[in-house]
Image (cartoon, rainbow, N blue to C red; front, side):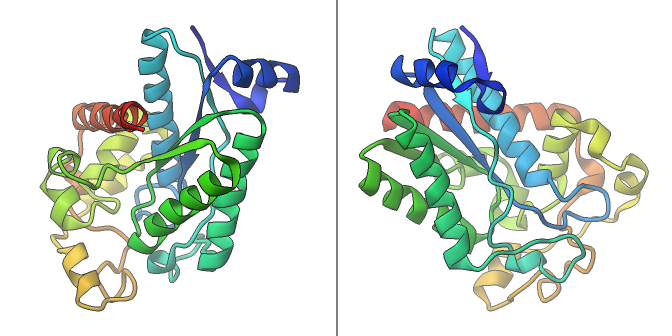
Length: 248
């Protein structure tokens, strides 16, 4: 079996795959600042790599899948103060994601798995809302993998659960495993640890990364990130995606 990328397929091939029951995989990320050592595309890169690994798992079971081009723009208010961040209004972001999901379903795919890796709470809420609306309008099974939820979250580490996981050891490890050429190593290893309870500060009313204490748009421990940890995390994220399909 083969993992197909929709962007490289002809429409007849796409139609044939949809008709044969292939699963559509939709990566969702953002374009936003991720510290001085990582690119703006972090969330997109990670979401696409998770899709690739989910596809490998499906292929091992004899199932075809099609990875669609990512949604790379959404609501990202917390990083809005940093150059390069592009944040959409909530209604615009929801409509964009809903439209993409509906378009994939109306192209004939009866099962769509959404892999999101932009963790801003307001955005993740929009992902779930868009999927619910798209399910209602198309009748397709549009599923959202949510690795924040138990039992998955704790397996991703303490920084993920309590440190905010933005451009720290968690995301930096994932990037070192998926796209090491995009990591500024000289900058990464020199960054001091920045231990901040990001979820706690958000709950306390902080409105952006600056108010949370992240003057360089990172939190946690990027200098301690490793390739090995990145691969471990990716396997968990791929497992969550596969489980979402099985649970339906």
